[in-house]
Image (cartoon, rainbow, N blue to C red; front, top):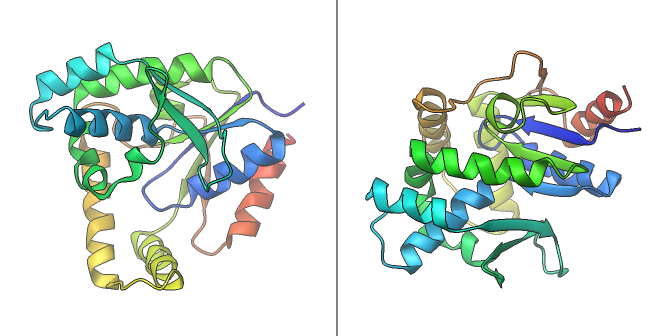
Length: 224
């Protein structure tokens, strides 16, 4: 039997969402990228005219708004459904204005606390692959399997650069690298739930591995 609760943590652009989604599909588990919850709160604040720098109001919004995540109900490219008060806001959470503000919202201690409670509620249902930055350390410290997927900032920036160019977009490698390093700095130095591997996590460095090789290693871990 594969583990029922699988936590995959790691820095931005380490490939954890790609690997996590693939693993969840293979196991027929819920894929839950916990970042969607912070995106949901960010969108709710922006949609309601709340200043995202108003920590107290944003935290209250996070506390008072039940957010649920469910398996994808539509084949439109989504990895899961993000639902607030019965409303599907999956694609609203991917808007550019959310991209620009989510790191501010996700750094708030109160928001992280409230989202951790909601993430834990979903994770404890089992049959889930949870992906984030503090799953193994804070949200589901009792997860059956914990993986920390790592890669150098340079490698992660290169992957993101290649991904944007493959879609026909314009990309500046140095600019992407700068953003990756800044996101790492924010994530690893925040006062609450800083990015770090759980003590009992298996650390996978993917610098010299392609996605198929990483997935093969993760499957080995699931099979014990």
